[in-house]
Length: 359
Ligand code: NAD
Ligand code: DAU
Image 1 (cartoon, rainbow, N blue to C red):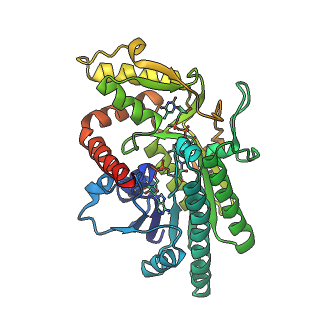
Image 2: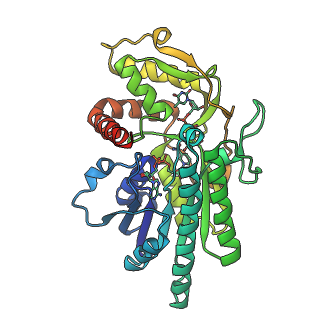
């Protein structure tokens, strides 16, 4: 297999930073691929953190570029300059609650930004084909939220489930998925889309359920569970997702979509109880009482009831399976946040400063 020169967007975010570590770490051995360069393009919004990439300092295979994906000319320049043959597009506004408070950045980054990425890739790919190079691939990373909400007995989302997005976030991702599909069908851009369930693991911004709750349990703060806590999500350890993304772009069939999931449906309240138990077992001195900490708060508007994912296609066709169970992945995650308090504290300081600057 020829060398891969990969451009990752959103590589200072949660999944993106884990992906860059995976590509420059385990991917070579696990997937038998040689990756000679990872160009990491990220705007460094509130969700992007250079400190998540600190371990890569001095690794000259990693090039970080602060850039907005809406700047198609700059993206095109980077593709040419680094002779990229794989794009893994993750940059997005990703938090549902923020999309309810302020939808515009979601439309701009997720839809307009993805359009600019696709357009830059289309022009670049045309030049490569004219030069006799046929190895270009574009991975568009999306979410299971585009499929809407399931009833308690419905089967999980499959690759053929009709789209029914319910939040500005999921609608903006659905829009970007449709653009990606159109670029394959109309322009033959060799493009693969993945739709994944809820990720958890290291380097996740502490606004999402798992890191938020872990942090609050450690500090003995109230845990705000939306509604009655019985909404259901499927949970996937982030490194399993990164392996699935890499397999999909390297071995998947252009024009196809692959669902990726953790085979682990859980009610939110059960996730929160499991996190409290895990923190208590790692730090018995804290001895947190769930009854005291859990507080049911006003529900998220339009809160999707249940997500579940049928990921049999990627298992059958690409040999992917999650390696972590909820118990093993969640334990690792709790341990990581306990051991990396400085990562969270730095983010909180930076975020506080940004907010003061905005005011
Ligand atoms: P994240 O919010 O942690 O990170 C997003 C990154 O994108 C940040 O580093 C941010 O700085 C960057 N970014 C935002 N706007 C940008 C712009 N205009 N130009 C360049 N960079 C920009 O998100 P995440 O949770 O890591 O999600 C990554 C991708 O995976 C997203 O496309 C998301 O929709 C998808 N996804 C996430 C999950 C999940 O559970 N987190 C599940 C399925 C799919
Ligand atoms: O399903 C994939 C999606 O998972 C991704 O596309 C999104 O980018 C990612 O943010 C995630 O979306 P969710 O809305 O499911 O994740 P979040 O962590 O915000 O919430 C998970 C569940 O927990 C959800 O049902 C809402 C609930 N929740 C969340 C928070 C932050 C609470 O009960 N309390 C909270 O404080």
